[in-house]
Image (cartoon, rainbow, N blue to C red; front, side):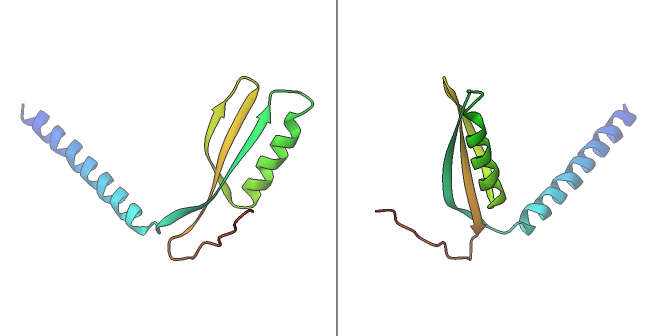
Length: 96
């Protein structure tokens, strides 16, 4: 019975230490905001998928991150986002 109590206490201490470490890491992360989004379609066609693949790779090289993918009947659509630190001002470009 006494061993069980000590075992539970040890487990709780380890959990507490892990949570404290996670909290410290979260505090170190800088605030970010989503500044740009892009949706790229990739068709399930052996002749056409390469163009979507290249566009996704270029976007990833340009600093975009994959947020989500949506499967459609004819392929997938990738939702990509670009993040910047909160204190930076985002460039606003309006398409007319």
